[in-house]
Length: 589
Image (cartoon, rainbow, N blue to C red; front, top):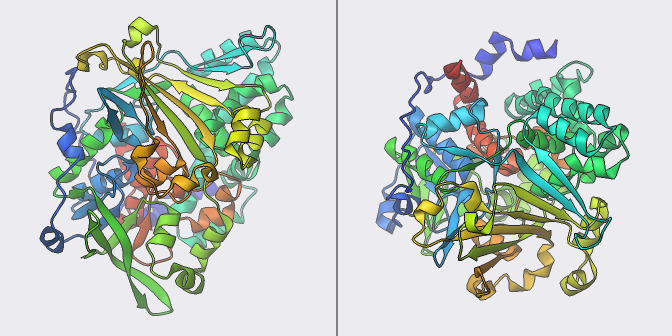
């Protein structure tokens, strides 16, 4: 019944569809199949730094804070709709988690390591296709896209390998072969993965519908799809998993993926855990041709083609706020400093921040500790009840030999010392002494991948044979906090050893420097159960409690590339009352 109400054409007309449809025709062009990346990629992602006089002359309908995927998607949509948009990015290049960096002759990805289901059948993929004119090519990874290694390979009887394959049928068939006698368990896990979409519909509705409507709908908790939302969002993942089986080795086929959320299944909602698992299992993993930075390149070209502007080294120091009737705040623009020079005010009707809740509400609001508790109780509740996610330790390795010569394949390896994932994580995360942790504790996990093996065009763009590797684990920010005020360069090192030519280390402090994080958090707000409670879901909307200030990015939904696309679209829906995801789906039908 509730599902029928949500799909009522009258309600849809009230909430969406009152502006022009920008997806009336398919604008995909023939794909440029050149092995070489676009010659202007570097200049597009590193646009000129504007002068003070240029800033002062700017006129904008919408200012977007941050140059990551969600912000660029939103700017692309709004610029195509006719808005004058300006994107300000504090880093030296656009892209956020999709940006890459070079060390010597090596180029490394930083945030996007693989994406699930970019086969073109989902609306988020179709939206990205239209916004980039079909110029992104996604290479599928191996059928076995993830390999789980548990234990010490040198100790006989303690080492276990679990292969994770793409496609529900192949996934279940492979696991049934690896764990005979658990057919019903894997059938149940497939059901859990496939049914989450019923809950996802409700989650999106709660983010954009009027608050009084959301409160009313929540009261019908016994009706679909609200009952699905309660099941997936209010139940802990482990609570459901362990009701299916107590076998930790079998459970690892769903629980291993927690590294993508920085919390074990014990702390996650069922929705988050199975959503991420399903995202990859449904069609496998994909990697973009020419690497992740090609994505912001094409989005930026769309923005500038439609009259928008993007600037780097442009830090939004503060929001320009006004007091309005009823003791409320209104955002009417931002103060922007270019290359650390004096800030320039930029006025706009709409301000969209993808900088995260902490940056937006604590750093960019003058006297926030006084103003927020007094005038913004909803924002204050979120800040008081949430915490940052854990930091990450990244190792980037460059090899002086090709992926083919080294025998590298297009899959990821997740390494664990044992199947007690909770204890591995908790012991590591709660240890205050990094030296003690390294000497006496096991790592929570290691994620190892070879980006050069995932992109078939990689070798064509190298003058000499090379390959790249990314290794990731989690670590507390406190271990590196003392380095926060020091130069990033002092934490880098390189060395030569056989085929290894370059090492580069990224720490939680690196995240502070390049992503403007507060406590080295790589995934914004913690993805714990509070994050997806009814209260937080209602309050963490795309339209903030401050008039004229809108939010997008990982703190409004969850971390990941696909949520960045979706939230970029939904913040535009909130502003224009047009459902762009629906529009693009109609185009492809």
